[in-house]
Image (tube, rainbow, N blue to C red; front, side, top):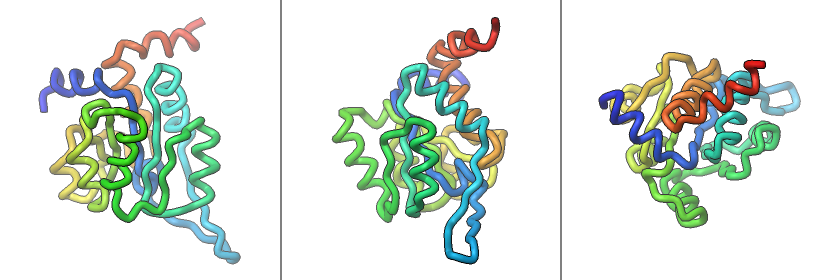
Length: 176
């Protein structure tokens, strides 16, 4: 895909949806002795999502696993579209489109594994990370330079804000 085509698709995005494990995290799963699950999220990714939301683009989470940690992170970031335990991500994605009235071309999705392929093929702008399964890497429009759980989500958020012309307004908050 050319850079111009990428920009044109990014200009249409009204909601960016993220997988969690392997996208917002590095994919590692940590368990305490009590069975409690822990995940590490990068603060820059979170700030990028907040900036994107402040620019008028909604954010969502669509993950195959179920974890209270994800609910806490989503609440912290002001994400209200949260779908966990999704065995059939495409069916959940289609339900989200119906609920919001969005068209596929108005959504971006960021995934890394085979379970993400149906949504990546259906959405308007498909993103992944360098660690993605090779079949996923071959289906997306953009692979981040930053790694999963280490700034990849931020990179995508900034790409969309730049394409939509909202990046400068977000930066104005810091250029005082």
